[in-house]
Length: 233
Ligand SMILES: [Zn+2]
Image (cartoon, rainbow, N blue to C red; front, side):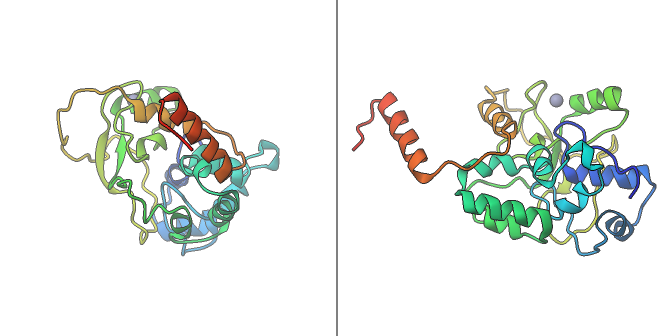
């Protein structure tokens, strides 16, 4: 596809593909899959997408937007990468480059995780206004979709939309628009200290790197325990 859009900072690849559909006036999900992936079986996955290699190949090599760069800057992969052994990190990256349907989620333990996965896409209306004035269009920011990320670091509580985040049977990419319908606010809970949101953004800013070994994690936990004056062996 000529003139495939460049991803904006922290934009989900899912969102970039959706914008490509808008830019080129493609309303058929199957046609969009044909144009971008040359494969109608690709599942529209927001957090840990597959077939990233096909997206990387849309860009000139001089931009250095490799599949690994795209995974680290435009998916939620950096939230998982530091906590899995190095062979599994490499295997997961490889699956994101080529495979389909839930393989990456299984490899990263997302489907069996105790952390509750968000049910719906989220958005920040104030950030959307900023996106429009800066870029002339809207996009799905990846941090909004991270588990536990409920407040925008710059603004207020995020709004949940009606679009399910984990729906492995869908093939359509939905672009963020001012008409995106939101669910009613669940609570009027007061703003909290946003600790989780800050940690999420720290992890998302990590560059590609080797996973720490179990021995390194062991040493870290012992140091933390000593700092907290907890007896360790
Ligand atoms: Zn915001």
